[in-house]
Amino acid sequence: MKKTVLALALCISALYNYGQETGEDEWGAWYMYFGTNQITDQLSIHSEAQFRFYEIADSFNQLLLRTGLNYHLNENAIATAGYAYISTDGTFEDIPGEENSQEHRIFEQFILKNTVGKVKFEHRYRLEQRFISSQADDFTEHRARYRLQLTYPFNDKWFLNVYDEVFINLQEPIFGQNRLYGAVGYNVKSNFSIQLGYLKNHFTGINFDRLQLGIFYNTDFRKKG
Image (cartoon, rainbow, N blue to C red; front, side):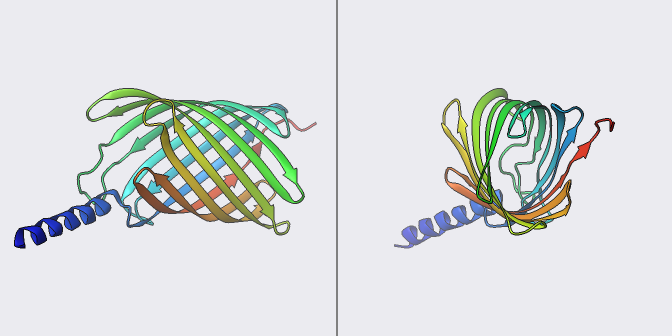
């Protein structure tokens, strides 16, 4: 009997420590910047920086820097090719966990937009080629992503933004992750907005709750006639 109780206690302890190591039990935060920088009528440059933490303002998890060249077929269709650099710290609270890694990523994406009533729909299709270096190995992975985003304006200033995005690996395992997001946004200016929201980041067997603060600032470098 004592051995059974001891074994049960060890299992519970192991599960508890696993949750603590991964930061799953913590409310983390992503602080993000996004920009579309118009250079001609059909070309713009995407700029992006994300700082991700296991906790609200502590325990660094990931740095993501991304840029790309956008080709605007029209106001509702945009094709993009770009590059991203990702540095990941897989530990939480100095407890050994997943390995740290560096990633160089090439991506191609296509965005389609449409409006139904007051609701703005955005469909984003993305392919990624991921070149990852960890402490144990260097390897390449490929995946596809699809995001459906809905934006509902309450008035000229305030709006609601929600999306769901699924990640599909092009190698085993097929399911990568799913992100469900909801936020309230405020238009400071016509080219400057802020969003404060919540993200449920679901992986197989593990989920993360993340607060998100996003800043969106667009610039126009076209010569004025």
